[in-house]
Structures are given as C-alpha cells and as structure tokens.
Length: 242
Image 1 (cartoon, rainbow, N blue to C red):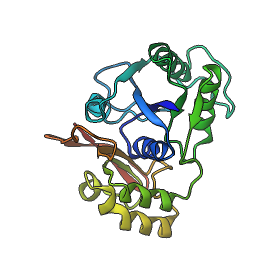
Image 2: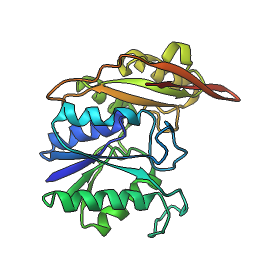
Image 3: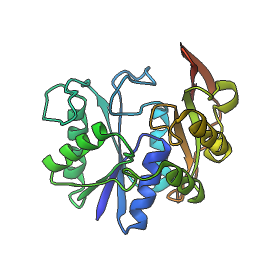
Image 4: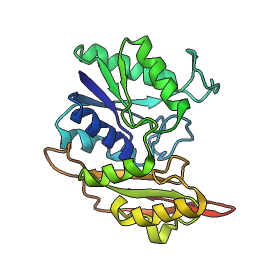
C-alpha cells in the first residue's frame, strides 16, 4: 500500500516507517502537526511530540517525498480512552491533515504511525483512519521495547536524545547522545527502576538525524543549546533547542 507516515522527528516514527517498507509498503509522503505559535518548541499535548519540529522539512528533502504540515489549533478536550469526534479537539487537526493529504494524493490508502504502548494515541489514530477509509499501520504496537531498541540501532538509524526527564538521565551527560551510546544505560535504568527503554513513559524524547530511508542526505545539527525546565522530585528535565 502507498502510505503517509506521521512524523514527529523522533526514533519511533522513523523506525515504524522502516518496518512498513520492509513489509512491502511505500512511504509516499510524510505528515506533521506543529504548534500554532511558531515560537513554541514543546506543546503540552496528549497526542503529539513537537520538540524539534523545526527540523521536519529537512526530512522530506532527505527522503525525497513531500511533507504536509498543519498547525495544531485544538487541545485535548475528549480525554476518555475511546474517542468520538469532538470539535476543538487536537485529534481533529490530525483528521484535517490526513484528509488534505488524501485529497492531494488519492493513491494513499494507509497511515504509518509509531505507536508502541499508548492506547490513547493508537485509538485516536485508528478513529481518524476509519473516518477517512484509511488503514492504520502500527508495526511496533505492543512489541517488546528491548527488541525495538535493538532493531532501531541495528537498522542503521541514528537518533539522539533531545529531552530527558527521568531518574538516572542527566542533561549534562545524556543530551545529544545517540541511542547506541545510551542503550546500556537505558537497560540498566530499566533493571533498577522499571523505566521504559524506548521512553514510553516520557523518560526521554529523541531526534532522528539519519535513517536507511534517507536517500539524499542526512541531517546535521550546526548549533544546539541545552534548556533546563522544571525540576521533578527525583529527576531533572532539560531539552536541546536547535
């Protein structure tokens, strides 16, 4: 099937694309939702990672596919696990984005997303897909996180940590480090505290700089700075701004 991939910039969206292509699907476009305010980097959203959204256009150039973007106008209004169409909810921004992509590229019949463990997110993507008669492709859904992390690294994808917010993850040590560099530490934290090695509990967020799907180049950060946020009771929180 020809698919549009929902891309945040993180490792999950790119590894899900890789798995979809290995299953015989073709990624013909990428879609992204970004904050309404251009000055905002991170949005308080139940659905979308927006940290690092400034780099999304570069992915389209690296992959050689068009990118479709929409600013998020809604908020998380309908917070029950099952989702019903709700005016003003941020999920309706996803619907509007995918509806426009489907109109622009009628051959698109599927949507590739990087959901791993969140029923909240998966059910909302599936709800939107059902309304648009699209197939949801979620190849990482409920797969063992250690297996997924190993697969991400062995696939040749290069992603770095751009936000840390968990016990044992320290901004001055771990921001900017690659998945391969922090893998042993993530496994250790999982053994000590039960943390998620893929960051599914918000322990960290990542930014992809290279992928086997990149045919025309890779992303190089020429400048970055660390920004420290609030301090949690047992963890520091900081992120890289580009």
